[in-house]
Image 1 (cartoon, one colour):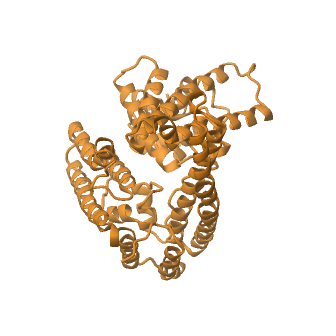
Image 2: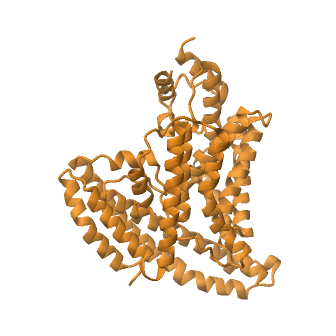
Image 3: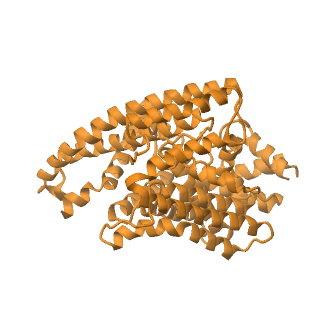
Length: 402
Length: 77
């Protein structure tokens, strides 16, 4: 049997179109068939995790049963109890499979873990968030079937965007009226076509045509200061462009497909290259991931540190938490020196950014603010980001150590 | 003291700027508030008004102007 990478080739899109047509007609007439949605979800999951990738399929099924057990069990427990240590234990258990998958290649010579499958990270984010909101009492009516639909919602299963249970549930339980749905349909189809341009034309050009050539040139130009060279600078920009168009393209497919299904999955990118500073960049780049980190790591840690008065000054609290937050993000990408350095780089960048913002606020009169400074800020931010992606790309590992 | 005045006081203390003249200004877009300030706001609401808001209740779009914050606190009080 064939296996398909989600949104990987024209056949996948053709199948998608055929499968979505009855659903579109239904929604236009104000009907949502849960049964049909479940059937096509299963169909596309089998396409992705069946055939030659059947071991991943088994891993997915076991993983889902495990996370359903944890979240359901915790929701039942939370009705009458609220112990802190038990909550932490649940979070640790929910993260455990992902941790094993991320650490295995680093300790087993690049060997990937048997329990891993495409999308495990994104499912873990959804499960952990569900447990945390259950603890807070903001998520009161946990429903097992809705949770399954939320986890296994096929348009976003492989790489997000990371939706939130309560937001998803509200969409899933209702049917948009015809006018609203027509708007969603129009948007959804436009997203798919912009996605084609991003992923199959631009990302293809930068990633498949340009990058290998520049990498070869950079490898041949070693020998100078730190083995740096102009082709490496070119590689940095080509890699950054590829990373953006590839992932923004995928995200547009996932969001577009969701919209066609009447689910307003949140957008992942908002013109990130226009950010005037790093802080703003993280409000525009891989938004659902950075907001997940903001809401479930950064804000919670800050809350805990301040409540227990761990640090005297709020700025110290913010700085320490920036570093922890971005280091966790680095480790999440994988246990390699370049992912961790990338995380550290962004943690420090956020700290420096805050120092500058405070300085600017204090010296409002003496710091010029005009068209030119705005363009300079955008230019500087974009280049800092591209430099961080050069670290992230891992090419320095090849240039220095291979 | 009423809720509105207390919330405005907290915001003034937190951000170092008087926000009472721009009750519908988006505090996050203008850079006056950030995640750190959000958490400080939640802690101050707890200590000064006894209003308990868990972090996951803090949906940024519902808390991004002085007027919205006041309305939110009044609804939780």
